[in-house]
Image (spheres, one colour):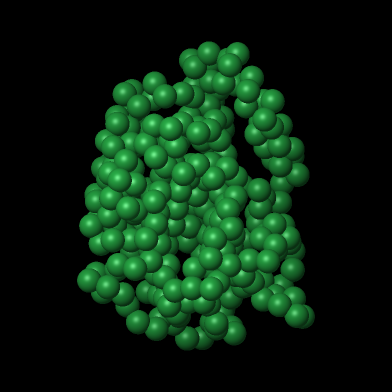
Length: 279
């Protein structure tokens, strides 16, 4: 178990045993599925099988499920057919699956919804768990980099997406996506300098907790003003072990690379040990 940043006490109330891993929700992101990441794909299928068998109430995928997306032909080339079958099995078994696009797979559109019953929710979503309002998004919109945000706004504009889907051939989109991937720097050890906490605070609106991916590290931050406190939970990357958040109306469990990092009561209520301050 890890301690929360700056706290003097371990943030551990009780460890969830496997037979109690039932009534609640799974949040995950950044699997970056591709032909080169067959082990991640296998472990994701194993995890999905486990979650479905334990009767989770819903699974939320917060973007970058795919390393990039150029069209449905990737189903066969990347061996994704089993993933789509697993989604359909979950949905048919009463476990809804929700997808919010990331910066790598925003061209997916409604494909997953049409093909396997996944509910495609766009860029962001507000939900409630145990009376606590949550804001869900991929997280790239929380970047401090104005140049990145300008490029993001252009690429994800509806007209740009239409052009990409109708006028640019799949091979060209794949080539461009691979070039962009090669130029992507590795994630930093400390993600705080790259996060705009004021943007998080503003975008989450009336929600008490924001959950996102993109930064490839499982962290918990507290954002405070003189009158209110809110929390940001960032999810880890699958590389190749499972990284996710399990959340119920009473407790939560953060897992990164198969290791339980944080376990605690929900809603979050500790007064110290979290990031405090302003940008």
